[in-house]
Image (cartoon, rainbow, N blue to C red):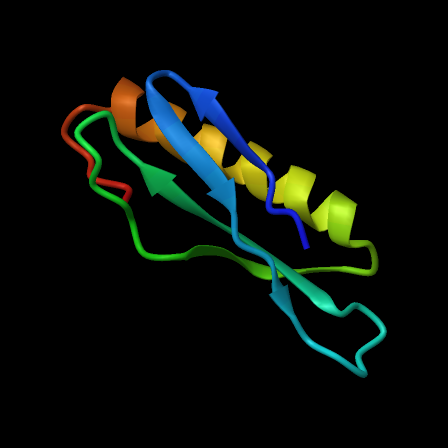
Length: 81
């Protein structure tokens, strides 16, 4: 399986989709964010976000990561990841 990733505002966001076999929605969305200094976050899951399609789960995971980076950088006093 190829893992999608993107560069956004000097951060690397990597989709971290967890498989749940034998489920009608077998993919749980999440991401890992690496800051410009090389520090990586833990897996940041999207609560209650499950998908039937792996590609869709990965794209949603990247969008979630971009939103978290925006939140972290735009609200300087708040540590999101």
